[in-house]
Picture 1 (cartoon, one colour):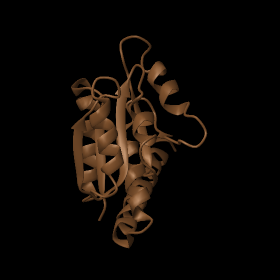
Picture 2: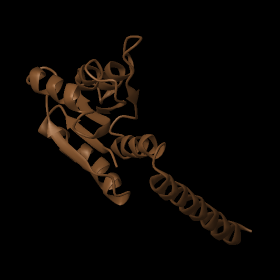
Picture 3: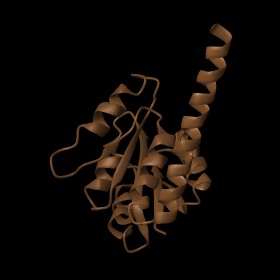
Picture 4: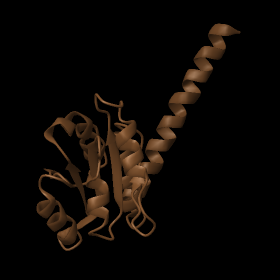
Length: 163
């Protein structure tokens, strides 16, 4: 199975990124986590992206706030899928990071999830890996069925209470 690379622009992004790690562990997807800044450690971020495929990665997740250039910097140096997590900051509540992450030039795509949306970033990475992994695909299908059953159980309970 391919690995997922989780990169964060700053150690302060760790509380957000931890949610992605939880999801990847639930699905049994191997991952590595690193702190590389698009601005403070550009060579390390570039080197990671350039060598990611040969090191067994299938998807990269990049979490960053404010200018949030990490996802774009990684995407510029690999053709692996890159998922950007814009992180909430004290300045503009993460809107700056969201706009920076989503506004990529043509030819250098970055999939973008909601502000602090690390769990969905991990699920999207799992879905990407599941394209060629039937076991992972089956786990996703089971999780969807379980989620649907929870909603239907709540529907039955609420219908009984209010009718």
